[in-house]
Length: 283
Figure (spheres, rainbow, N blue to C red):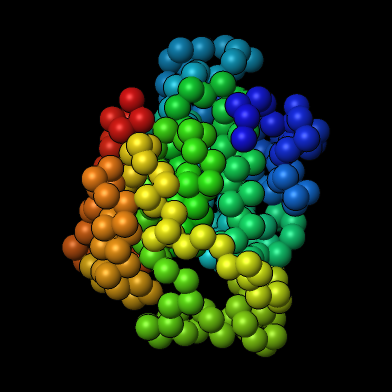
């Protein structure tokens, strides 16, 4: 993945119908390497306007967070907007809807091809002029940021994975058994489409993608933070511990007392601490 602005090559592109909002925010559709339009939003952090008071100037070459939401989320979900707002005190933020979610095109592959969606968002963030990029993923998005960093070394400056699985096909909890029904059964996919605004691909993985535990050793020396709640109802604590054991010395683990699963359970104080860690780690 190059650091050229999106839209200047054969990879991901920005469609021309982007919208510029207040204080330099931008909403547009990125085009992934396999041609999927991905609904994306850029919100400049306060440092942008401290450095460039004129909104028409180039954005600050400072820190930008690229947020990868969980399964059935999208860029307009309140919990995604809340995480974005909490991180904006530390830098600019790019949020986007994974394929099959919200207004993005395509169908969800539940963590496989979504790496291409994240790659397009990271390239866009670089193209906006930011020198430091930190990916922050939740649940499915947490697995995607790990695989992206492993498959595209050097494209990000730090990685934060929250509430992610360590291995595929886990069915050890009731929520994960329900999720597998949603993904693998025609009736479940109908519930996903009409009840959860998530269009799910009917095909099985072929080949099976690199698992998160297989990905983390390939991320070094990029700083890696694994965050997990001790009351996560989807993935018990053996998942983050497996990730950190596989990653080695370059990974840090935060086990959060009383925290449940993913964005809905990540309180603003925790997101602010993640922002502090990222500022230091991506330095």
